Length: 252
Ligand code: 13P
Image (cartoon, rainbow, N blue to C red; front, side, top):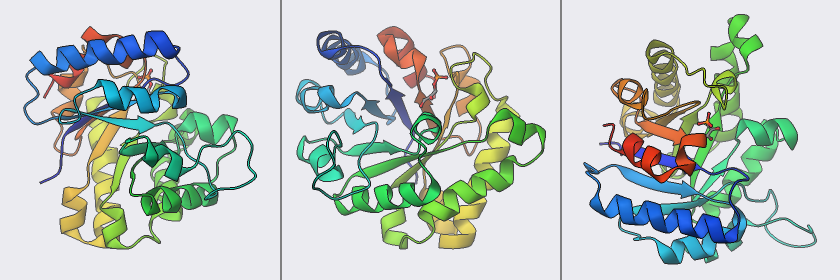
């Protein structure tokens, strides 16, 4: 059966000291929380990855980088490779976030390269997809999600794909306070699961964790997570407050 997961994406927030403090605070609260088997992942800035790994209980909390390079190694000043991320003890990398697609022009083919390298370094990939408002208003959202997922991920073997977690994050819901309705989330998650089933079969589709992201908070998490195809969340703003993040984790 697929795993329920609540992952935080801290984006470019905190600094070394405040980030480590937040990770420790979350770790302490998670130890007392009613997890009901929910997996927790902290997606932290690169400078914190190695030390957050050392400061959280790895039985409860996994650590993710928020990006990794499209090249294996070499003369790419400022880049961080998948192998470097893995060497810190982190188990995950977030790839394809809409902010990276928008500000860093990451395309489906770049994300294909990044995903391959991350999987080759034995990282699990939290692969983000999502349409902008105009695409939804034009009724193109299914087509867009299909392209984002199939062009970057459907060349993988079934074994490789089993290390992918999908995060559906409608861009119009990110950081806006406007969340997708429960029905909109379920509709898209079930569409994504169907796509995966058509490509890799029902068993793998049934085992794939599909997260929702976009203005998810302690007030709406329970309803969103109650949908059969919503397996948890990728949380931005609310993951920066330990109490809110714990409440979301306890929403299953
Ligand atoms: P918010 O929860 O702040 O809307 O961000 C969602 C997100 O982008 C997570 O990756």
